[in-house]
Length: 204
Image 1 (tube, rainbow, N blue to C red):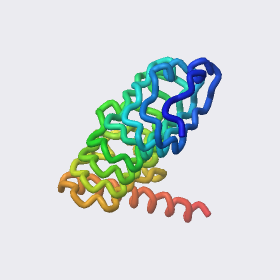
Image 2: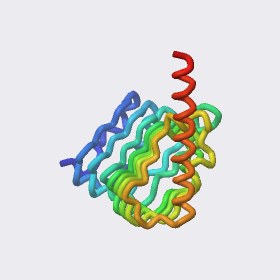
Image 3: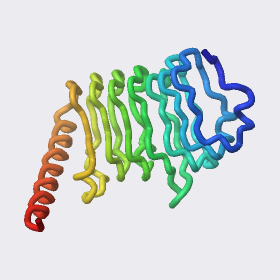
């Protein structure tokens, strides 16, 4: 298994997808990766010895998918503003199965285009900040240490609630305020679904 990215990688200026899945001996990713401006997907799933990932720079404005599930990174990389309206175009971020990260930085809420955030089985995750406004899927199943969740509805677009999925099953240590926020979200979504169904039935 590879222990580091091949030296030639830094010269692959037109590289669109970097797939290093299950490279279990990969321990680090060089900063030279940030020079690959054409990258749209970075897949490091299952790189269990990977302990860090460099902060993303503005020149990586085409990056849409970043999969860091099953790694040992202890800090979510900063995604610098870029692209449309000065915001990152990242659509999907996966940290599933990470056993090191305890919290997400507030900058995660600024990822305007983020649609999917996978935190399933992040066993040491303690708190979540305000979520990105256009998030459609958040999976926090099995986050045993999670106690605090910012209101998941605080900045979500109201018209998108019906199409979103937020999962907090087996998060048994949530405080009462967080539980209340999640219940409020579920109730609001149920109301929207009921209203949409009634409108559909009336129109059919």
